[in-house]
Image (cartoon, rainbow, N blue to C red):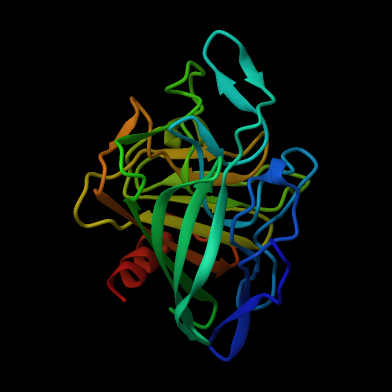
Length: 281
């Protein structure tokens, strides 16, 4: 992939995110488009990319560790009976072009390639919407169709034998600070309570910022959340939590996640109010 200038995303008259379509990264990072830096309206950065603890974490985007055995997450692959091992199995999310590219959002076409084979075609929509003077929402929808001509399935380290590691799908890596961020849901408190739950939304509150993630897919049951706070700050969806997700040949699945990006620390009622407004926008 050749590096190119990031696409800017604007909201309320300010640049709030940069979207890199062709990152200049080694293949062990499973090259893929990503958003970074994403900022609050006051300019505080709330994403991280290539951190020392997990150099394959790339801001906010879509990443899956196991598509028919191919790694679109980056780093090591968890293999049942062997643990995390280095494998030559990394895939690439290739940016094919924009169908629409406006200051406040875009519609992108991508192809997921691995071992010279086209596995999935993706239609991705990203939009930025102002909510208040101190908060805006990032609305990301991805639609994946199996174009391989054969049945596929999506897995995770959890479905491959590593309990508690059902990551894969939408993922947001936040910046690591001196103290771990506070985690809470609509009724839950703490990382352990929220991780793996199918709650309506999850909040991550750091030093002067709050992110609130809402599962907003209309046609499927809500995916469980993957949440980390103490080890590193990150929140994502779990496409393959209890078992592999089958994707038959020619079939499509869709996911939508809306993220509230706010200055300051929101409480539960404030987070809930902004989520309702963001999802309805």
